[in-house]
Image 1 (cartoon, rainbow, N blue to C red):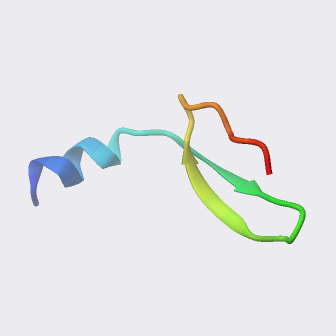
Image 2 (tube, rainbow, N blue to C red):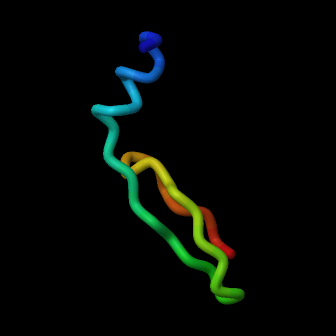
Length: 35
């Protein structure tokens, strides 16, 4: 397992959905963009 993979295991994500019912995994510490 690469170091980058181990770092990703410790991150928290939110699943966000736009008005077209499209989903995206977004890092919890970042502001969700409009749209």
